[in-house]
Picture 1 (cartoon, helix red, strand yellow):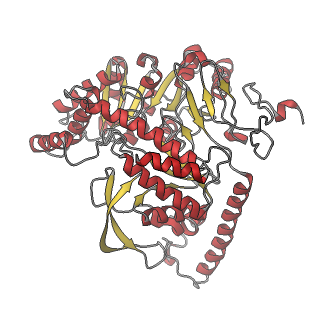
Picture 2 (picture 1 turned 180 degrees about the vertical axis):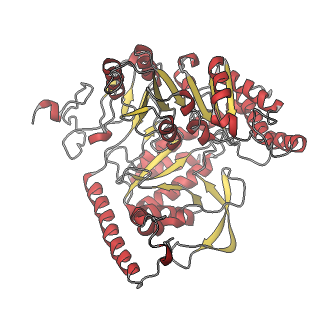
Picture 3 (picture 1 turned 45 degrees about the vertical axis):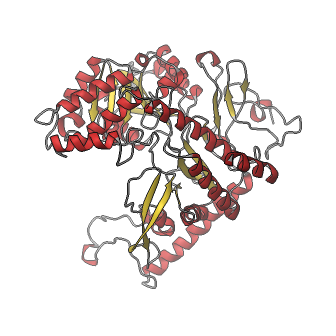
Length: 565
């Protein structure tokens, strides 16, 4: 094999043979955490098409940039594929039994008198739902009967037909530790200043507006909120919407159209993907957080122009997210901005998960890297996570916002944001900004950062493979095998821990995971309780796949005793 095929990464960096007693992975190379420092670069690569590349533009960063994507062990990958293969074979067998009426089929089917119609339900497309998802469906859609804060109450349910239907038992599981909600700053609560302010707004304005902003639905609360959001982001103007998903899917088509080019990260959220498709623009996808891939697409777009005619593109729009909610990774924003300026493109930044959760002032990934908000053309985010509310916003230049007020489908056709929701956002945002006269906002930001660092470090010490950036409160823990998806969720609930498990097609087929979301509302005791449960379940299900960073039993005991002090 040549040097380029064995020891070089795509960006020209070299992966060296193991030395100094380090344990090599199966191909003989050491793959470390991705560490970005001003003076030191450690190389890292993910396998095959999912490679991660370390940029050499260290001067663009003002702090270490560390991300971890440990390679899937070969044996685990093989067993995972075998697991899906076995499930698929049994799925076809069960479909055969259903066709012959030997096994009852609960899924929707066409009536016999409609057999000559075009099928409404595609049986084969529902194969995964029937035969794989239904086996572990009890891990999702669990009804909650309390505020989804740091702790919550879950309604107990049972299934008489293997997860096709559920029945409530009338019992409630009390004080389940919530490790799955996006309650990053702990504002999802029914007491305190936010709840009091929302109650007052409900009494004054009611719950619904029953009109659009352009007709009779423009309240003073909406304008107050938009001015506050613009001040919070450091931009000229902003506009708020009642639904976060529609903020992307309905506004991107207003910004681009035929003759425009959209460059989208391969792991972008479904709302960004839908908005790009609805726009009618040409879409090209670059590898996740890979600046070499993005620059190649930008260069080709400038050189070749539009297909067939080779005319210049009317507009080139780059779509990225602040924190990627399935990977826990943070966008390499300094490098994206540098490329955007170099090739005269526009940048659309989705801060749904990063706004309020990153940066010393909680103002998102721009604040985290210490960048100028004016370098981002369209700043988008949602209020459903850090602010404990609903809806989304777009911020930028005044000309941009004025244009969207007239052309956005969300502005023209959607009902206005509910007044108590707007008030919840106003109160929580003022708290983060310190305009409430207290340090509560800064304390929550500091607590979230400390909890994130502690939780990630302890999981790595226990021997689990976790993905993402060290500063990301989204913490994916790799499960891999399909049978372990349902088993992990059920075993954690037995220990009174509520978790979110994710599998194919939301993730690559061999990268099923549990996704934890750390909150400022979590106490150290709650995190230790969750970590102890994760440790027990990890041993039970043999989930400790990591080949580095794992502590010995003596070190684990010492760390546990130190955490109690």
